Length: 191
Length: 109
Image (cartoon, rainbow over all chains, first blue to last red; front, side):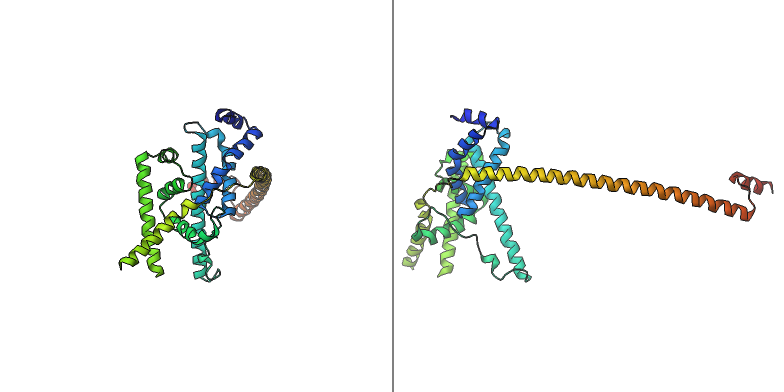
């Protein structure tokens, strides 16, 4: 079934088309979610939310971009939403611990790192990099994850983010520079 | 000093390269069924919400009607009491029943 037939099926509400769509894109969506939220359980929840959103808003898809681009956009927006929510939750836990309403150290408990694609011996260093990626500004973070985790080309990232190829290149460059700086500060402090 | 910087650079480089060793992961094979369950749960929740909204609307309507009936009854009772009070005052001062007479009499005097 090609993309056009799939879209016709989806818009007419056929369950079979939706199942094919999920099977075709689940790996992409799941790995993208893991790139932003490196925890298998959280990423799976996000993945489900992405497909629920696709199911509900398929009528709004005007085919100005490819289906894959549209799915990436939804995935990214859900992931950023989740990250903002996690940050708010941590901030609340911090204030609660300050006024004695929460457990001491609640705000330190980061979302447990559990990326099934990372080998055991590389867990520590990869977790550190993911922690630093989470501190990047939204645009730099999105571009970096799509480039390094999803291995998308600058052109494809540009289509997803509605940016020119040179703008994407500049964002990747700035993200890498900033990450190096953050890592340098981290290792300096560690000494 | 130079060695320290080299070590630091090496550590940063190794950390930056850690994503190159990231393996792509298969999604849960039951993902489609889980999504279906979520969609059904959400549809049921919407139905429950809609029923709750209908019940809430009906309760509000009943409350509104009760308040209205109560207000009308109260208004009627107050009117009859005021009318009784007026006639008592008129009798006490010796005024006639028609209110305009009070002023007519006053002007003539």
